[in-house]
Image 1 (cartoon, rainbow, N blue to C red):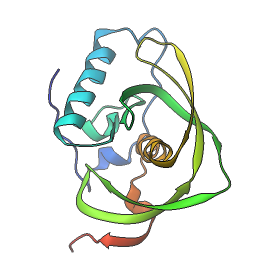
Image 2: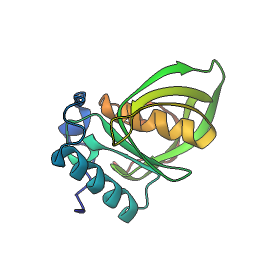
Image 3: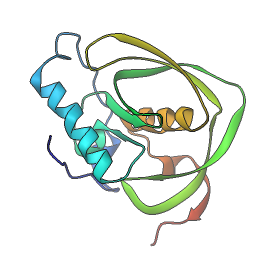
Image 4: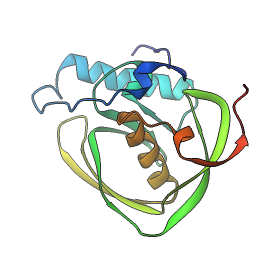
Amino acid sequence: MTLRAVLKNPNDRLRKKAKSVSAEDIPSPEVQNLIDDLIETMMVENGVGIASTQIGSDKRIIIVDVDGVLPLINPEIVGKSVRRIEFEEGCLSVPGVTGIVKRHREVKLKAFDRNGKPLTIKAKGLLAIVLQHETDHLDGILFIDKVIRYTNPPRM
């Protein structure tokens, strides 16, 4: 495992859309090492999630750590509740800034685990929020794009 530098906003690479990982590439040392590096970096940075784009990779991989560390490859939100909740968010790529974001209360996500096995996750609460936040990263979206009210605004 290698600790990787977390890209900070504004960095153009944070705005790039990540590319799907092929089924053949999932067991490769490149992908498995990337997953390990993401976990190590998230743990050292005290995050509850991290996306590969935050360390400069263009692969669609996220790690979430709400009820245990969960690597997700090619995550896709396939269902969303109508009800939404407001939640205070921060981000490793936007240090020192927090704000209220309105997200879906519940989501259904499909992905592959690190062994290439398909998963379906029905999440609510914090896990649903983290899944939405991290999948946004893979599409080049930062939480600051969705803030409705800053609790600790960026310094100009």
